[in-house]
Image (cartoon, rainbow, N blue to C red; front, top):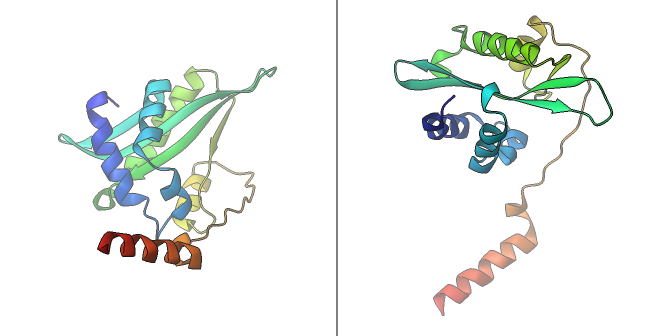
Length: 161
């Protein structure tokens, strides 16, 4: 991935990680997250291109625990444009990232996804990932909360004054 790719990667992520489909990913996907990851772990940020167009990305990070000899490679974000699903792009990105993690002495590679994302779970299981640990994320859409609605009514009333 190069600096020039950040905008295209961000836009593709915006299209893939929607609030309706993947609320926990949507909440974390923003331009600051992407730029910070690129800035700190550029060598493990990868893109796939069709011609000059970014059609997929794998964004990883190396992690070290204090007082531990273990290093981890964490695949934080993986996305492929819907027109290019099932074309092998995700597999090639994960394989390349795995190699980069091994070159950097990672002993374990981590990935997480929503429990309901059965396609992603099957994809990662097929590639040898296991030892699943369930983690529950809960969300509350505050736009439906009475206090939120009241605040919006008050703001509109102020605008009319």
